[in-house]
Image (cartoon, rainbow, N blue to C red; front, side, top):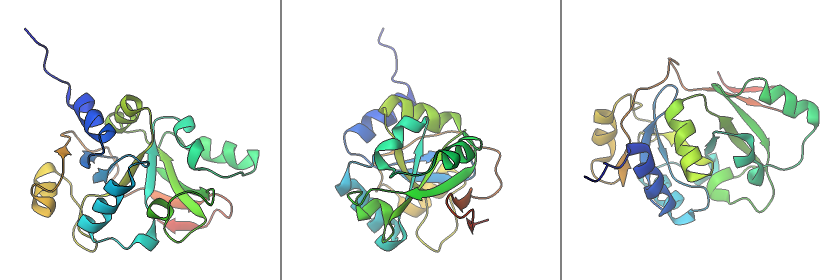
Length: 186
């Protein structure tokens, strides 16, 4: 008898093929795709009705998955951010000029986080990549706290919805600028 495909493995296959999925994060359901699938990122921005200039977050299970998207910064900054990971702090860091504006928006920085959520960690491990993350809702509408909410926002427009429990956070993660320590989102 053939063993059923594990949902996280199936979601990773869809991502690797250029698909767009919803998945649980620390506080809300997120929408995601791989950062090298630019057409899928365009689709995500259209579905979400999110302005390109705002940029997106990259989630990872380990720092090496973020490195291709990061520009140079001081070793003391690295120690500071790594002391908060894995965990619910998203950091704004410099990004190379060649990073797509679909990811970084109109900035020379990028938002990154090593997630503590076990599903996100395993998804990144299976893909061997960071993944794009943004809340699974139409911009300006209520967040998605369940797969029912995700379906209400996007019906059948996603390639897959990965079931799973949200983390313990009551609100989306804090976003801080790593160079200035300025809080962007509390």
